[in-house]
Length: 612
Image (cartoon, rainbow, N blue to C red; front, side):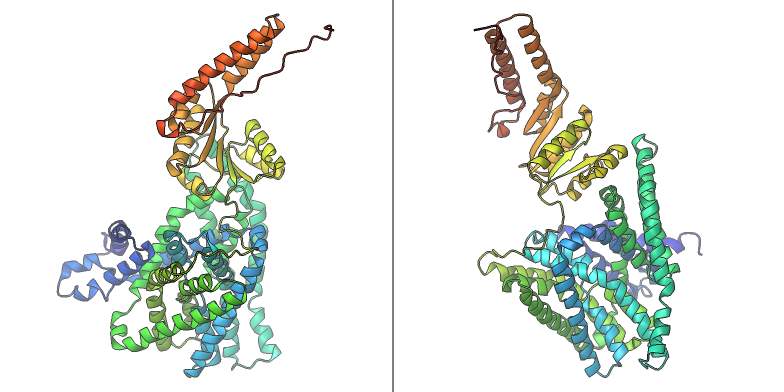
């Protein structure tokens, strides 16, 4: 009976897979995305479902109606594109323009053309061949990036060139979907490429263009004030869940607005991410969205696994695996050639080509759009989709193969001069707290050409800092996720300037647990707090009241007539006592350098103006 749990059975099965199968796959050091794909195959009608009639209780362990997960699956893709949009600041695109708009877009166009020619040779119409070629030209951002991260390949030439190409592919999704719409309009008119037909086809895109324009305008006007209001409410403890709710509202709202304009939900989410990328709330939004993105993407890949028709593969294994192999070989050759033309060495070009050769998740979006528009033949499209799914399963294997081939030769010393790392602030100093102390430190770093970013939980301080041209973001540095998004693994130093001792301790503990070699400098309330911070692993702790007290005492004693030599000697002795206490509080493994918490310079004696 519906309404007594049956309606939610498939969702429960998916959550069980996410909680049991995927962690098991992680323990085997396999990509969680592949775990979701495998779960979809296992729990689908061609997996355990084929035995449900003979073993009825297995029906409770299978997903019988994939349509129930379809809407959540679409949200998963939208969240992925939203997260990608958060990385697409205009500055970053400008810095990477040569590889993104050169190598990346050329890869999409050349692969589309070569694959389309292959389908034309198979007897497909031009429109059908182009749709299938565009779908297969794209690679899997959701699988490739985590696989490269797991293998430690994101920071080198391979990771950076791969990211640039994937970025270009993500930017191509919207034009590809619009191209499918134009091809469908032309096909309905008999395929005549006259100006009148083309004009009518393009006119159908006017509502979409107007909708996108309104979304950009509304986003620039509404997003920053909305999140600033939420941040103020969060600061006074009126509900931290409000930030999560606001982030979900932006993703879902932008997706629905795009659908109302005649575009896909994914395009709206991508645009919303780009608009938010320019605000100070970008990093907090990333953390708020991350759990939902991962889970909903899991739904998407479970759906892909459910669509893997094992009977169809068994009926034509040569056709399915042969097409997957041909796709991989063709794309590897094209991408390798283009990468070499754009200046990459042979080894990074080959490794980049191997991980990008399989199809991607957006192939299914393009194929679905082509089927709806009547451009893609259902039987061939299903075979191509099966081959695309099989190729996605091969990405970890190809990544391992590419890395092993790279290890057989000397280390790669080539650099890409205009290609920044995946994180724009990679290597920058991180300042936690941008009040008076943090701002002064930032100004000194800027004066000496030292790159930095700052974090603060006061939206007013963040807004003021950004108005003055500083890279300040809203966020809580006590959370591991926030430090990860700010690049703590590659930063040169982290400086904690907050005046709340408990919060300083929290940030220090979190940062030190993430990196043992991190230069970690913290502001302390007094000597007791400084000793506690040294025990937590700071490189240096600066006790503000202790140093101020010593300077006040020095000036007072001198002004009272105590001889300068005696005053300086006693102040120096007291500082030594504090340093010894700090050194004793420092863990033994970190006592490789003396504390510099208190200044060691000796003030010159005052010169009596009446003295000859």
